[in-house]
Image (cartoon, rainbow, N blue to C red; front, side, top):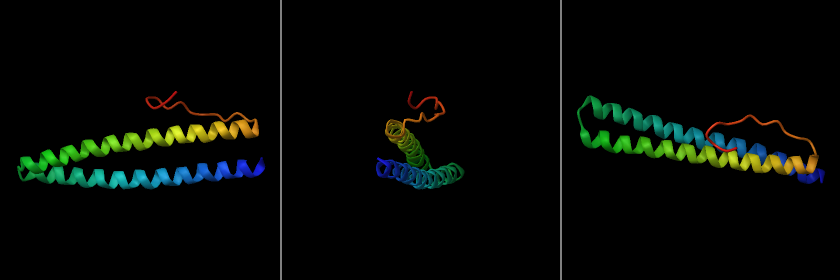
Length: 99
Protein backbone atom coordinates (compact mmCIF):
# COMPACT_ATOMS: atom_id res chain seq x y z
CA UNK A 1 0.00 0.00 0.00
CA UNK A 2 2.86 2.37 0.77
CA UNK A 3 4.40 1.58 -2.61
CA UNK A 4 1.12 2.46 -4.35
CA UNK A 5 0.98 5.74 -2.41
CA UNK A 6 4.54 6.61 -3.47
CA UNK A 7 3.62 5.82 -7.07
CA UNK A 8 0.59 8.10 -6.91
CA UNK A 9 2.62 10.93 -5.41
CA UNK A 10 5.24 10.55 -8.14
CA UNK A 11 2.48 10.46 -10.75
CA UNK A 12 1.02 13.68 -9.36
CA UNK A 13 4.42 15.38 -9.51
CA UNK A 14 4.93 14.17 -13.10
CA UNK A 15 1.50 15.53 -13.99
CA UNK A 16 2.44 18.95 -12.62
CA UNK A 17 5.65 19.11 -14.65
CA UNK A 18 3.88 17.87 -17.79
CA UNK A 19 1.21 20.55 -17.38
CA UNK A 20 3.87 23.22 -16.90
CA UNK A 21 5.68 22.15 -20.08
CA UNK A 22 2.48 22.05 -22.14
CA UNK A 23 1.30 25.38 -20.78
CA UNK A 24 4.65 27.02 -21.52
CA UNK A 25 4.61 25.75 -25.11
CA UNK A 26 1.07 27.01 -25.64
CA UNK A 27 1.92 30.40 -24.16
CA UNK A 28 4.93 30.73 -26.46
CA UNK A 29 2.75 29.98 -29.48
CA UNK A 30 0.11 32.40 -28.21
CA UNK A 31 2.65 35.21 -27.86
CA UNK A 32 4.06 34.48 -31.32
CA UNK A 33 0.55 34.72 -32.80
CA UNK A 34 -0.07 37.96 -30.92
CA UNK A 35 3.14 39.43 -32.39
CA UNK A 36 2.12 38.35 -35.89
CA UNK A 37 -1.34 39.84 -35.34
CA UNK A 38 0.22 43.13 -34.24
CA UNK A 39 2.52 43.16 -37.29
CA UNK A 40 -0.46 42.46 -39.55
CA UNK A 41 -2.25 45.34 -37.90
CA UNK A 42 0.73 47.64 -38.38
CA UNK A 43 1.13 46.78 -42.05
CA UNK A 44 -2.62 46.62 -42.80
CA UNK A 45 -2.63 43.01 -43.94
CA UNK A 46 -6.12 41.55 -43.46
CA UNK A 47 -5.07 38.00 -44.37
CA UNK A 48 -2.31 37.96 -41.75
CA UNK A 49 -4.59 39.55 -39.16
CA UNK A 50 -7.39 37.06 -39.79
CA UNK A 51 -5.16 33.99 -39.73
CA UNK A 52 -3.25 35.09 -36.63
CA UNK A 53 -6.51 35.98 -34.88
CA UNK A 54 -7.82 32.50 -35.65
CA UNK A 55 -4.62 30.99 -34.26
CA UNK A 56 -4.92 33.12 -31.10
CA UNK A 57 -8.43 31.76 -30.62
CA UNK A 58 -7.23 28.20 -31.29
CA UNK A 59 -4.40 28.40 -28.75
CA UNK A 60 -6.74 29.91 -26.15
CA UNK A 61 -9.08 26.92 -26.61
CA UNK A 62 -6.16 24.48 -26.40
CA UNK A 63 -4.95 26.14 -23.19
CA UNK A 64 -8.39 25.73 -21.61
CA UNK A 65 -8.51 22.06 -22.60
CA UNK A 66 -5.05 21.41 -21.17
CA UNK A 67 -6.04 23.12 -17.92
CA UNK A 68 -9.29 21.16 -17.69
CA UNK A 69 -7.51 17.85 -18.30
CA UNK A 70 -4.90 18.76 -15.69
CA UNK A 71 -7.54 19.57 -13.08
CA UNK A 72 -9.47 16.36 -13.82
CA UNK A 73 -6.36 14.18 -13.60
CA UNK A 74 -5.16 15.93 -10.44
CA UNK A 75 -8.53 15.41 -8.73
CA UNK A 76 -8.54 11.76 -9.75
CA UNK A 77 -5.05 11.20 -8.35
CA UNK A 78 -5.89 13.07 -5.14
CA UNK A 79 -9.01 10.95 -4.63
CA UNK A 80 -6.90 7.81 -4.94
CA UNK A 81 -4.39 9.22 -2.44
CA UNK A 82 -7.23 10.03 -0.04
CA UNK A 83 -8.56 6.47 -0.32
CA UNK A 84 -5.16 4.93 0.38
CA UNK A 85 -3.96 7.26 3.12
CA UNK A 86 -7.28 8.02 4.80
CA UNK A 87 -6.32 11.70 5.02
CA UNK A 88 -8.52 14.35 3.44
CA UNK A 89 -6.69 16.72 1.08
CA UNK A 90 -7.74 20.36 1.19
CA UNK A 91 -8.56 21.67 -2.27
CA UNK A 92 -8.97 25.18 -3.55
CA UNK A 93 -12.15 25.75 -5.48
CA UNK A 94 -11.30 26.58 -9.07
CA UNK A 95 -14.16 28.60 -10.48
CA UNK A 96 -15.15 27.69 -14.00
CA UNK A 97 -13.39 24.34 -14.32
CA UNK A 98 -14.78 21.54 -12.21
CA UNK A 99 -16.69 21.10 -8.93
